[in-house]
Image (cartoon, rainbow, N blue to C red; front, top):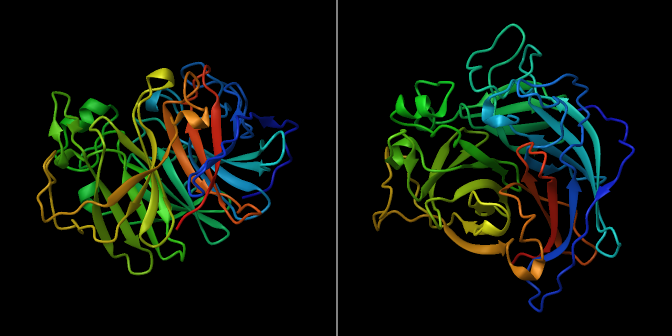
Length: 394
């Protein structure tokens, strides 16, 4: 991915730092903010079908530290209006400078924006009706998770397929990693109701592969579904499934061997938004509700462990409730409650969607930095936030 000239702007927002008595408790360092009206660096001009500028910064669905020089990738999802526009999918290069001792502990800079293109060089679009590629554009894409592979490639998981795609450093698709057929739908369609009603199994519409983690040794990837799959929940009149058990998919990158595990949501109205590897078996996962501001109830970072969890690859269906005793979901605890009053970040400015997770550079005292990014859905009333915490794991 080419380097860009710095945008002549530093965007930052500082909240109070929390000093807890428990050394293992996450400590808030600060919060950075990209304004809702800020343009990106895509070079796109004109407006989308809904009248919004095509070059608006927002919709952050994933964030990944590049391992040097305060450099990160932040990926946008399929654009505004829930797949109703031909938004050209893109990934941004941003700088996040973290200094806990500064009056400005988190400083953001937008460095550049690259569009995601297929092997022909045609840009992927968020339009839900773009089921097949055209001469001008690639097929539809709803990118949700991003992780680096080595120093010059990255993987993206997306919801429409669902697919796992590999891109080079310029944002060009190289190949894909096969996903088990149980996760895919037989009859894609341009609307949610049509997709759900016309399919018996696979991901529910707009609830596909939502988060992607790569193991510390780079050998495996682990993905989470946003919610229950069609065959795993109780279907309503629109065909949408409801339940508490989400599937997790793990893939060995060398052999292609897959495993599946069960994650039990705290509440059936919750969803999963991202996953980040701590070790070969332990991960952080975002579990959240669909509420914003004062109405928000669940904005949790869960710590989960796959050790001892049952591989459910052979199960065609999961019950919407009351899992059999011989099937063990992943173990989980609440590692970080974003609504905890001690952090001072709840209330009217709490976003609905927390979507990105990454570890940043270690601090001088040896603690890790944990970054959490919000998706503002390109809403002009909502900024894009990046929360930075200091963390210790045992």
